[in-house]
Amino acid sequence: MADIILGIESSCDDTSAAVLRDGWLLSNVLASQEVHKAYGGVIPELASRAHQLNIVPVVSEAVSRAGIALSDITAIAFTRGPGLLGSLLVGTSFAKALSLSLGCPLVEVNHLQGHILAGFVKQYDKPNEVPSFPYLCLLVSGGNSQIVKVNSPLEFEILGQTIDDAVGEAFDKCSKLMGLGYPGGPVIDRLARQGDASRFSFAKPHVPGLDYSFSGVKTSLLYFVRDEMAKDPSFLENNKEDLCASFQKTLIDILMDKLIKAAKQTGIRDIAIGGGVSANSGLRERVVREGEKRGWRTFLPELKFTTDNAAMIAIAGYYHYLNGERSGLDVAPVSRAAEL
Ligand code: KG4
Image (cartoon, rainbow, N blue to C red):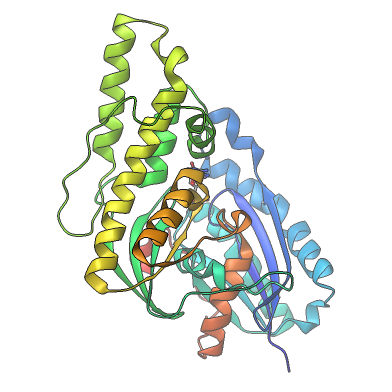
């Protein structure tokens, strides 16, 4: 009999539900929250309220688009963390209640493992090429910047990670600083395409090993813009494309230097990227270019799988389900990855 997994994701500001049959995608429904744009960042209390409004219609829609009945569900996979506690609580409570009413098992999922495994969701109209284990995944989002050695769908080794800000945070904070809006990544990405990336240079960190640091480059941009604005108040307006292109290139250089080092150290040539920042057009081009130069096989997630979505939670949950892992009804969400 087929294993039908309902995935539920509510870790930040996207409410999502997806259905997989034996790993094949039947539906993936997402309700994004526009309410935060006015505040320039996610407001946790507003996020959890919006999840409460969205969760029932989103799950109903996912089940209906999948063409299944609730009674067909084999197991429910939900994001336990990391994320915003109030947001996670909505998805977790809903998943528990539904599993209790259907009498089906509950499987908790680490959100980051979801991002890493997003490429393993099988789609009927796609080639579905996946990396061989072990492979390296550059996991880049608003909360994380890590190089992960993926030994199997259940075994992950963090080879390096940021010691301060995540790269997505650097995009978001610097966009705010330049008055470009939130979320910063997509705006900087768009403006960078029209700019000259060699025009300005920003300080790069010297962090040993495979760890990252992004707070210094943010400060470097801050002081540079402040000094230039003191000389010419229209500097920002007249140079924003070049600033974005140069800043983005610096972030990509930092990411790639360590990724290349990790590939050399491990001898691994299957390289994937994941997380919100993996949508960045400059990073995607660079990974492909380096891959061609270095004989890597590169795996870029489809754009719809770079943002938070429940299909990636369902696929990660499916592997845990096959491994016999189950969560009890006393399971509670956790805000930090270290607690998982
Ligand atoms: O994975 P994600 O949706 O949420 C978590 O942090 O878990 O990542 C969101 C981050 C934000 O910092 C956003 O600015 C960044 O991903 N982002 C991008 C792009 N699209 C989203 N950063 C750079 N370029 C993009 N095109």
